[in-house]
Amino acid sequence: MLIRDIMQTKVQLVELKTPIKEVAQMMREGDFGIVPVQENEKMVGMITDRDIVLRCVAEDKSPSECMARDVMTDEVLYCYDDQNIEDLSRTLSENKVRRMPVVNRDKRLVGIVSLSDLAAPEQSKNLAGNTLHEVSH
Image (cartoon, rainbow, N blue to C red; front, side):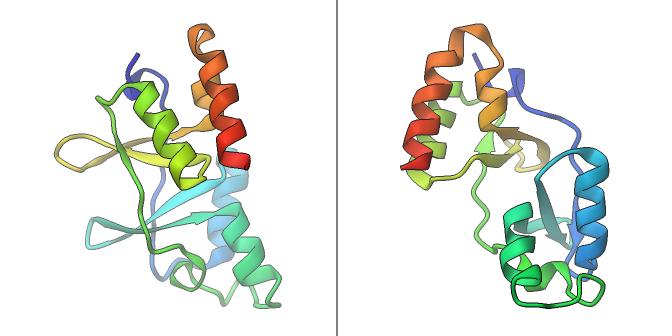
């Protein structure tokens, strides 16, 4: 099974200057926990709900004044939509991450994949459980 078969295609991006309050509202409304950050149509970072908590809220910064560039993780790990889910499992485990942007071979963002997406297909439940164990330890 390929990553494109399980990924979420509803992806919203934000700019470096987007206030964190808007990012958090976007996450709430879309029910997702990761948002790619772009500059000049290129992914330059990722913001997770955890990034917002640790780099904005915990540091007592105002979510209205704190910008995406202030809390984002600037290392962008990604996978390709035509990779198999075993590759995804390995990548998530090795990097201890639960979510990852998905790009096509032109490196255009086409989706987001998460550990929960990996668990959705019946034939990959054991793979998801093993991956969760590896990510968590």
